[in-house]
Amino acid sequence: MTDTGTLPLIRLRNITKTYGEGATAFLALRGVDLDIEAGDFVAIMGPSGSGKSTAMNTLGCLDVPSGGEYLFRGVHVENLSRDERARLRRRYMGFVFQGFHLLARTSAQENVELPLVYRGEPAAQRHEAARRALDKVGLKGWEHHTPAELSGGQQQRVAIARAIVTEPQVLLADEPTGNLDTQRSHEIMELLWRLNTEQGITVLMVTHEPDMAVYARRIVRFVDGVVASDEPNEPLLLRPTPETGHVA
Ligand SMILES: Nc1ncnc2c1ncn2[C@@H]1O[C@H](COP(=O)(O)OP(=O)(O)O)[C@@H](O)[C@H]1O
Ligand SMILES: [Mg+2]
Image: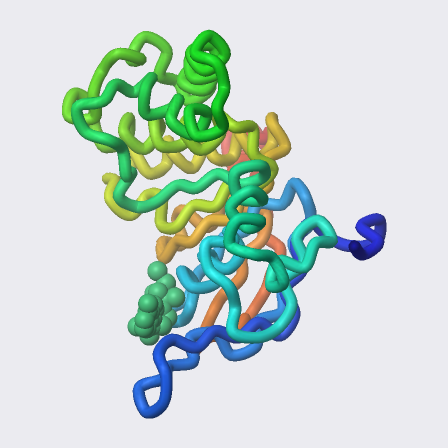
């Protein structure tokens, strides 16, 4: 255990990731350094193949780095067993993907309850927590609809409800608006923004769309497996509107 008082929520130091071996080995991450404080909202950008998803899989403890240090709440993730990583993930992290990944022919309510089933929570608590999560994402009244009966934007809301039903500290979203039209994308970004500001959830989001990255508090750009730039951003929803001079 390290002294967590002086550490950020997340610290990556010289993280490398190699896929494959020998002549076909590919170095997807070439020494990534990154600190992320609790409550931040980070947009990860960069060209295709620059290592964004690899970095997200590492941050989300879905995969282990080939080298370097990953400290999460002061815990060395690179030294954890597969089971310990799974426990850390279930306790602290929620995931949202481009393709929603919902179970078909299964209601929104049941999809959202799933992480709590894995946790072994009693049915009554699960029902209540899932209803609350669906309410938070604006889907009150849609509990019994299946994915096929919902729009893409609504399906992504269900996926976000499923990600936050366990009250995670960190929400990791890999191109969450990649399958959505512009209007729906902005609605999802506003939702992520609200979860960040109102619930204090740390949001890490990959996007290749500058219009979506502007919702974040910070923009990190990957190029060729390293962090090429790391800049604070004035989040779109805090910028004064031209008409009023007030915050939108
Ligand atoms: N499982 C894998 N096996 C081999 N190569 C991989 C694997 N996953 C990703 N890569 C390679 O690593 C590089 C980075 O991939 P990725 O992290 O998915 O980039 P991004 O998300 O920025 O598009 C790419 O060149 C990709 O082809
Ligand atoms: Mg990717």
